[in-house]
Figure 1 (spheres, helix red, strand yellow):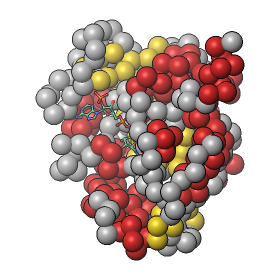
Figure 2 (cartoon, rainbow, N blue to C red; figure 1 turned 30 degrees about the vertical axis):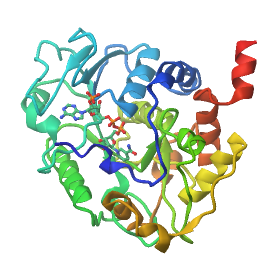
Figure 3 (cartoon, protein in one colour; figure 1 turned 120 degrees about the vertical axis):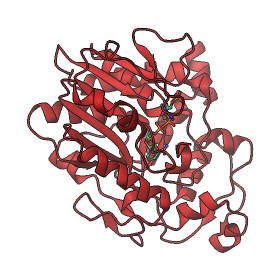
Length: 337
Ligand SMILES: NC(=O)c1ccc[n+]([C@@H]2O[C@H](COP(=O)([O-])OP(=O)(O)OC[C@H]3O[C@@H](n4cnc5c(N)ncnc54)[C@H](OP(=O)(O)O)[C@@H]3O)[C@@H](O)[C@H]2O)c1
């Protein structure tokens, strides 16, 4: 079993909506393509796991002219040259021939329950034989544990408290010990079109929780993709810090994000509850999120490595989701006209 959604770092309700996926990819690319430098001409990028983040990374790299291979557990149309089948649980593994030419790799696949990394367990030997110039591993800021609302950077030692974060840190360490040119990207809660609170607000499912001074960091999925491509470029110029936080500028309370989203919709949210009141009916997973409070710094990514966030805070990010999800009546009307 994989960890899957356990790694979501915030408690905002996120709802996947497949209908928005295609439009979303097209819209995001124009902005990002203008900002990103292409990979080298001879590069082939392998994206292991073409889920929410992986599909954006792949789409962006393709738009920049790079040859990209992705993997899925169940490709809709079976294996093909570009979308390979990889399922660590079922032992379905791409062949060396299918992976020929890969120079850059990003793994978006979470650890297995026993703490092993599925990619290194199944493909580790193959990776050693490939001419890899850059290997990215999507990890989580959960490895920092609870900081009681304080800021945390890559210079701080990880002190994970949740078991899943301990397993994640173990996977990071296995990647770093692999002798591959690995860079760890630590992500907080990932949101974006298709993973936003709008549908849940519309259905009346969100009741904000007030817990003073408790915040979560987050990142828009387009910035996950943009940062990946930017880090590949920086690495090709000799700048490859081992660990980079990929998050926006403004850690904020979930209630603030939800209220902002509801204002965009012209709806009001139900009255908020205190944390103590909400705690009684919370799932163990939600309780574990609220057990940690930290503000994640992006100084290394944005100041030292020069990445310019497309969505520096949740307000810009939520406006973007609102428009891209096509739920905005004014937006739909003007598009149709
Ligand atoms: N979501 C968050 O808020 C968040 C926050 C911090 C860190 N992270 C971590 O960041 C990474 C990317 O997150 P995401 O939300 O983009 O992930 P996602 O949408 O859940 O995509 C994960 C991908 O992993 C693939 N996968 C899962 N189990 C697999 C297995 N046993 N063998 C092969 N492939 C497998 C899935 O394949 P299929 O497409 O076939 O399902 C999917 O493509 C993950 O490691 C996640 O834990 C996520």
